[in-house]
Image 1: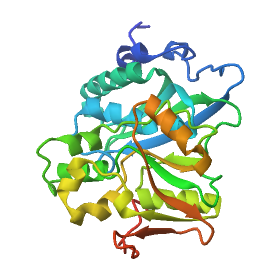
Image 2: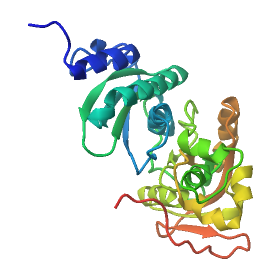
Image 3: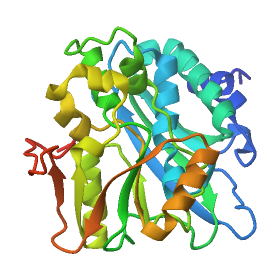
Length: 317
């Protein structure tokens, strides 16, 4: 019997085993062994990316790998710390080696930046588009996880960073918008996850903005049984987003792909939020408030009148 590895396992050994960390059993088994730090609760989150939906065919494979990790670093949305990941990839067989080499190079770069290691996963060939899935495993102090439910009447609505850059970057990538600086395209291809913010005990509810600010705020409203009102003029936009013009405002509010944090914060905790954000070098902005009433989101224009939106955000169905 030959000692050579079958092609699939040779690919795993060459490209993925160097990314593996403690608990992975060196990627020689179909499972991982995990022990959370004493006194911490496990946090698991997963997301997928499909070619032609979440990234474009000509996007660099190394940036696809980095984006996959970054959009899944959502334990920051629960106030936790990520430690490991499991990666599942479905690649066209004829391109597998070339794609995986660049993909894992990007993944390795961001694993080092965000201090996470590979625990396992699966690799499969497919006749269809590239499909990628990642599961992030982290931990958080007991009762410190931030959920979508938990917002209260009077809590402020806060966001990190700027909103709309990712959606505008997609418009740039598809030729619908000009971006001389490349900033917007960079934000679409390589989002910045807001990890390490100590928001447990500060935010009463929260999530990341992936499917659009208005739509994701609606998720918190329904989970918390509250209404919400935001002022469009308060939503933080980058200089590049403002330069795109007022005609792109709805795209900024509903387009998604921001991966910024959307938080409900009691007035008594606003100073604490600013302090933890400043410690991480992250800008935070109050854009509205939660209130009693139907679980709906109202967006006000600069003149105080309701802003009519043609859609709430991205939907896969």
